[in-house]
Image 1 (cartoon, helix red, strand yellow):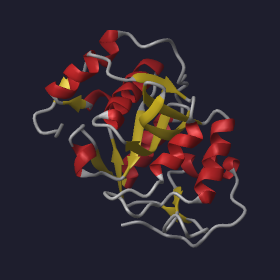
Image 2 (cartoon, one colour):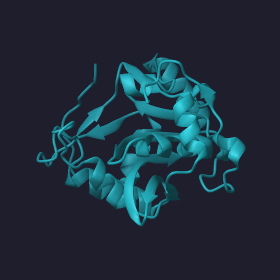
Image 3 (cartoon, one colour):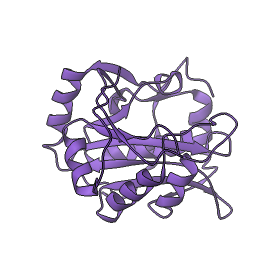
Amino acid sequence: MSARDGQMSELTPDILLRTYAAGIFPMAESADDPTLFWVDPDKRGVLPLDGFRITRKLQKKLRHNPFEIRCDTAYEAVIRACGAHRPERPKTWINSEIIRLYSGLFAMGHAHSVETWREGRMVGGLYGVSIAGAFFGESMFSIETDASKIALCHLIARLRRSGYRLLDTQFTTTHLNGFGAIEIERADYRRQLMAALQVRANFYLGPLEPSDLTFRQSLTQTS
């Protein structure tokens, strides 16, 4: 259950950073609704970095490098693609205010995107907020098979290599559960968040090595 504590006005990226550090984040009812509301779930979705797992099929595809991976080269385009209406997701919580605020976080160095490209065209990606050793995953999209999954693999590898301690997924879904996401109580989440905020992590710490992209195998994650 989410706690909705009223609509907000005059929200700035600096305020948003403070709310994330307190365990609270904003959402919109729909892309057409200009207002936002606070969300503080009783149970929080997290994806333990040491518990991430993928199918054998996806691991094989990852080794073959089917996409070019880029970080932070098309951040706003990723947000807009995540918020685009598609048959499988006709409704979105990403409105113009979300785009404005999170673009502001990107300009401050507190938000990042991981993008999958093929032949000069972006075909998938994800974005999220970064504070100290915590990364808050916001949304992902894919217009080619496995494009967002491979972006997620690269995000996990980068977070591990860069010293992050927490990957917050906000909520859990069957899709994320297949990668190892779990649901924890709010108090437990707050403890993990406070510990992660004491860590110094660097999203750009060195290039990934092939060994960084080798993960535990899942028997249940759909391909």
